[in-house]
Amino acid sequence: MMRKCCQMRKDMKCVCVICISLSMFAVFLLSYMTSYELQTKTHMRRVILGGLGEFNSRGNTREENSIQIVEVVDTSGKKYRLDSFLDSSQEDSVELHFGSKNKVVTSATTDVQTTHAQTTTPHGWIQKNCTGIQQTSELLQTKTFQFLANYKNPCWHEPLRQVKVYSRNRFSEFSRYSKLALNKLEEEWAKRISNNPYPRRLRCLPYFFIAGQPKCGSTDLYQKLTSHPDVVTPPIKEPHWWGKNRYGWRLNYTTAIPLTDYIDLFDRAALMIEHVVNPLVPVEDGAEPFHQVITGDASVSTLWDSDDWWRLDENCGRKEPLYTNADYIHHFLPNAKIIVILRDPTERLYSDYLYFQKSRKSAEDFHLEVTKAINGFEACLGKYTQRSCIYNRTVANLSKVRLRIGLYYEFIKEWLKVYPLDQMLIIRLDDYARDTRLTLQRVFNFLGLRKLKRDEEHIFQKPVANKRRLKDKNIGKMFRDTNRILDNFYRPFNEKLAELLDDTNFLWTYDSI
Image: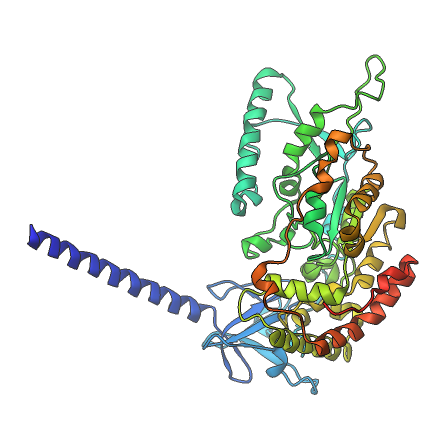
């Protein structure tokens, strides 16, 4: 018996050694296969790309419209700024090479026998021949939906031809809750198909968007707003489809997520919208009852994150996007209600840093990253337009702090190009925190929601959601010098925002945190 036990232990050790060896080999192989090399002969383990030469692990390229080099990591794992490899004082560009074979990234429009190397500028751009490229956005060419008049929320009916309508939905691949919700819905569709000769389902898009901004109280606002009896929610609070996931952000950009998959997320809400009618609206004989329930999208990237604009043919050769998320949403939802909640951008940035930075957080590190971010942004302004630098992912990723999110004026200005101001409600976290009830009533009025009954007013007393974590509070305040630098950086943008909205409260008072 003892011999058998000893033998079993030896076998287990052998298995462990083999597994560890295989894992180490796999890591080494992956590292090698995703390595890059610049013309400076500096060997890289990884260059994270955002454009034309988007490599997979086999070194093949999937040609896009342009490129932005987002991040450079050397063989030891140390990260570098792009401008530490590129001399921004020179107009000369460098070639991007793949692995040890020195494979040059080439344009899809260039003949193989006369291949010319693509070149990148100091801010990450690679030029591409745009001859013959389509100049109209795919989304803007998509046919719009005819919404039902007896539904407050934008909805329409579609024939229901099969039960397994969500088998290829991309959101179910990374959201377990979404997958469960969609699978549950298929039980309802099975009943409809078996009981109705002409089955159909109600399809809906959001009536409202809480479009921005991160770390400004949007989670608490969303939770209290969706507690209203006439508001129903999709299974994912922030699908980020308009800003990121349309291009497959959560799927490592391996596949795009179509509009139909996004609409699927609102099918459960649509089912509830369909079953609730307004008893106060009289119904004439033979007429359809009125459905007053609404749903929304609370992705706070929607206002500002148009970073993947370079993937679209219409932007080929451009240094800034022709259209933003505002244009695409307006194409489908010209009557959408847009809610934006803001706070002092200096405070927002520090809160954002403490929340999203997972390790080595400190006031000193924050100061260094702020300095790096401002320097990178100002260096970009020396060569490109302000709009180009704001929508340049390379510039944004030069630092760990998301400096540009606080440029509220620049993003809201884009939305006001297509939406009138009375379809946008822009509120301050300061006001929301000071008088939550009054601010929520403003939101309810903006969305045309009925007044709450007395026994429903408990939602005003709900605990604050997504508060700053205790361990982050223990880090303390930012340095006074950091606060001053950020206040000076954001002040011109705040002044423009206050003028745009005709409200001096958006100047904020630059108190210490």
